[in-house]
Image (cartoon, rainbow, N blue to C red):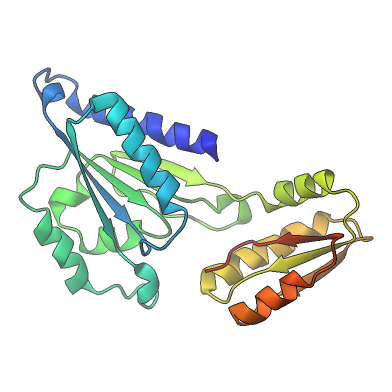
Length: 234
C-alpha cells in the first residue's frame, strides 16, 4: 500500500510539472488542484490518500498550491441516478477558478463527472484513482479524457489469503466477514472465488447479512485457531 501511495505522489508532481512546461513564469504561480472523492468523507481510505497528496504537493511546491476537496457521496443515491442539480453546485463553485489538475478518487467517480461536468472540468489534466477489477473479468471506467493518468488499484484476495495462511500455518478455519452494501457483497463474491485455492482441510465459514452487534458478538467468540478475513465492510 505504501508503494502505491509513492506512485500516486510521483504521478501528481510529474503531472503538475508537465502542465507548466513551456512557461517558466507559470512554474512560480500557485497551483490549484481539485480533488473529487466518490464517496462520503467517512471512508477510512481517504485519509492516507489525501495526506499523501498534501505531503507530496508541499515537498514539490511549498506553500504555492491551493487544494480543494469535494465529496460526491455516490452511496447516497441509486446507481446511475446521481442528481444533476447536486453536481451543478460544483460546476458553479469552480467555474471562475483556474484549476491546474483534477484528481478523481474512489469507486465510480468518473461516471457522474462525465455525465454532468462542464467543459472546463472535463478538459483538465486528470489523475484517476479507482479499483481495477479487469483481472476478475470486470471492465473499469477510469478514463475521463485523453489527458487522464489512470491508477488502478487491484485486489489480490488469493495472494492475501495465501500469505495469511503462511503466517498462521496452524489455522484450522477461515471466517469470511462481510457487510450488506452492494460493494461488500461484490468483494465477498471475489473472496469466495479466491478461497478455492485453500486446501480442503481448512473449514470455510461465511458471516454476513447480520447487524454490526451480532457480527461483533460472533467474531469475539471465534476460536483462537481461526483466521478472520474482511473483504469489505461498509
